[in-house]
Image (tube, rainbow, N blue to C red; front, side):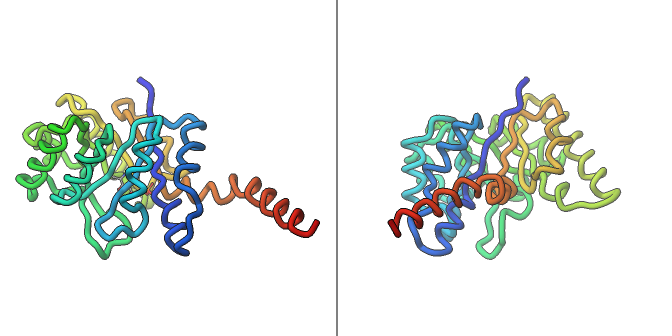
Length: 241
Ligand code: PXP
């Protein structure tokens, strides 16, 4: 089974929002990611709109040539937007306004009714729903009752762990992947994955898709910056002719 890559382009928008400019152009970034062969584009419309804006979601939906995976909190506002936009996939995530990034998985036991309601509404709109949860067996066992066909295992704790803890966190992801797969749930994973810690996760056979953002946008600063510099130098040179 092939492992698919969803590239989270939120932080292209972070850079744009930092200066209130119209660049870097999200659609251009999306096209390059698509040309490079990624199977999905992932974006997170946060309640505070700190990076992706509502208009971005609609523009990306219009032009995206791959699967579009919209990450959203389980709120009425976000679910209504998702139903209107109609992406192929939606990943329900926990959200606290003050956090730097999504911290931890969704507690689908504690928030059972709310998550189930959001999931059912999204499903009725023809959207494939994924729940972003911890690699926790008790959480996974409740997924069939919620009715989501897909989970995304939160790999952030694994990514941040060091020494023996890293091995323990990896084992939790491995075990959770096996249990979810046995229950007939599609297993995706993501958060905090980078060029050093991804391959061991990618080797877990039950995992079907990885969603990666921050490390890839950071890497692009170096491997993609050369052409950007050449173009800018050329513009400066031409302005003095
Ligand atoms: N998956 C989910 C559900 C997320 O919320 C995020 C961050 O928006 C990612 C994957 C990507 O995480 P990172 O930017 O750390 O690669």
